[in-house]
Amino acid sequence: MKTAHRKRDYLSVRLICCILLGTCAGGSASAEPFPPEGAGAVSNARGMDLLRNNEPEQAERFFADSIKSNPEIKHYYNNLAVALMRQGEYKRAYDPLKRAVELDPSYARALSNLAIDCFHLSRFREAYAYYLRARSADRKYADQRFEKTRVIRKIEELRREAPGNDDYGRLLEHLQSRDEGSDSVRKTD
View (cartoon, rainbow, N blue to C red):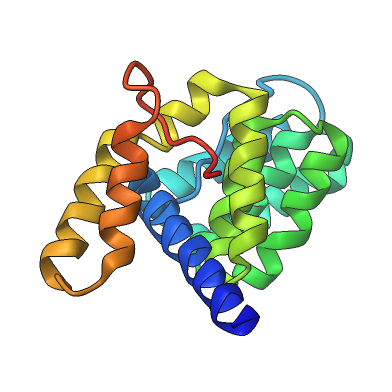
């Protein structure tokens, strides 16, 4: 019986992560153009231009140069990780994101990107934990990235595709009964 409960718990966490992070800004990572001055800023700006032009392989090189120029800037690590994630290199993106969070434990953008990265690495509990940390660090930013109404729409869509799955109904009930004034997802009980 414990195995069945544990399996259901794992599946519920996985489902929540899939919905949360799969709907988060299209599930894509978010880069940041700052800082505008100082060592590495020119390389960072060039990397940002390349990301905007959908050239993450070239952007990766410029972000790595930014880190070499100034290894204490959290934004550079986050941006390098974004370039890697956009190439599907989620394993390689993990360490730069962790370094960005080491430099600033309340860096909501890197925490959100870690949640997305861990999701793609099938580390669902860790993804959910980073989502909660991002929300704790900067609720407004996290609420924008993880919008409750989008999550509910996605669950409703999945429920229509698999009407026999009771987990969808339970998740909908849970989300719709929580803090109607809030537009973001809360931790499950």
